[in-house]
Image (cartoon, rainbow, N blue to C red; front, side):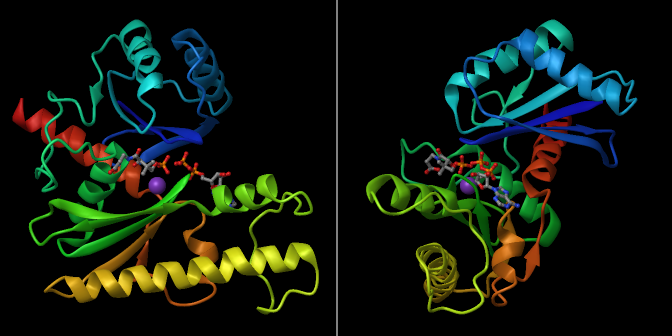
Length: 257
Ligand SMILES: Nc1ncnc2c1ncn2[C@@H]1O[C@H](COP(=O)(O)OP(=O)(O)O)[C@@H](O)[C@H]1O
Ligand SMILES: CC(C)(COP(=O)(O)O)[C@@H](O)C(=O)NCCC(=O)O
Ligand SMILES: [K+]
């Protein structure tokens, strides 16, 4: 079975793919100090808790945090007896090469999202991923990642307000009833929530105007559903898009190596 690992700047998600479905998914905070042994103790405890007794014999990793990859490699090597595929490394082939400026490194999560979205919906897509950063990935007609947009993430923006202004508290994102806040917390929530709705709409409209084909908009990341409540922002919401993309890239490498 395949272990898919998606390591973002805030959280790392592990899923087990049995060839036709994900049989389990677990999330932990991203910490580069965590060792392979610590990952394994954590994983095997959770597997035991869910009574999952499977033989993991391949691992694929996407990491936006380069420092954690070493220990995840050791995890694969020591406990699952395999050399993991690491998206973005030369030996990990992509179904379609990205078309970006020479020398640019694209976040592996964006390459994986593009591969997953193309597999499900075909070409001409905008993938909006609400993570630590909010990213927009543009997928061309042939499935290539051809660029996009990086905006500060929702929680990052709320945290920045709190840190920079002495009188602004720590606030969690939620959908405000109206726009005009009548206390500090609702004013902040309104600014971030409606500001993000506007950001997503404006950026997608401008990408669409710049492209010569109709673009489908796919939302992913935990906050996509929250924003969708406000307005019709997405054509589809795919919670497992990054994990699906990892299985697509894994399959592609199996067939081509
Ligand atoms: N459903 C949700 N509701 C509220 N906050 C969420 C939800 N899903 C994720 N978040 C928050 O969004 C931020 C980004 O999370 P995540 O998608 O794990 O980012 P990354 O992939 O960059 O690690 C984190 O602060 C996380 O706590
Ligand atoms: C933009 C990102 C920080 C988003 O990461 P995330 O929110 O998933 O943690 C990541 O994709 C990244 O580090 N990208 C490198 C630059 C680029 O993609 O162009
Ligand atoms: K992201």
